[in-house]
Image 1 (tube, rainbow, N blue to C red):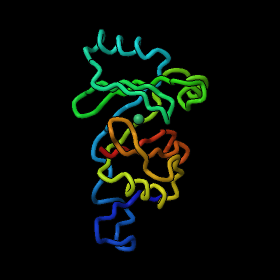
Image 2: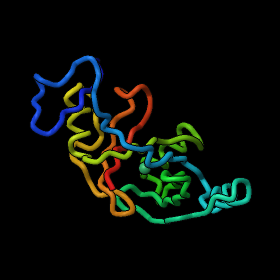
Image 3: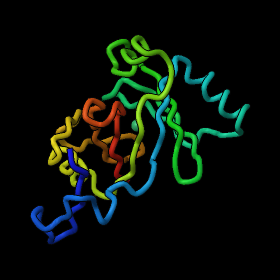
Image 4: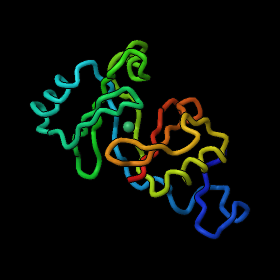
Length: 156
Ligand code: CO
C-alpha cells in the first residue's frame, strides 16, 4: 500500500500527492485504550501510582463497555472493561488478557479520514462514523490492514 494522501478541500484525487501527504489527517493522540478486568482496581492504580485521576466515566451500551478517561495533557488514558459477556472487549480479554486494546487518533473529520482508509484498501470495522463516548463521532479501522493495531478515529 502506498501512503495515504490527504486531500485538501477542492483538490481531487488525481492532484494529491502519491508519495506522502502534505497535511496529516491525525491531529492528536486522543486516547490510548487499555482493557482491564477490574475498572476500579485500574483507576486506583493510576491514581495511587501516577496521581492520574478520572476526568470522565461512561457506560457505552452499544459497545458493551464501561470506560474511565484519565486526562494526560490533551490526551486520555482510556481504561475499558466489558459490561456483558458478548462485548468485543470481553472476547479480547478472554483471548489476550489485559493490556493495550486500541489507539484513538483525533481527526477533524471522521468521515474523511475513514474514506482515506478505504481509498487505500484498508479494512474497516465501521463503514460509517457513529457516536462514541463524550459526544464524539468515531469509526474503527481493522488491525489487519493497520499493522496489527486497532485504530479508532475520533472527531470531537
Ligand atoms: Co476508544
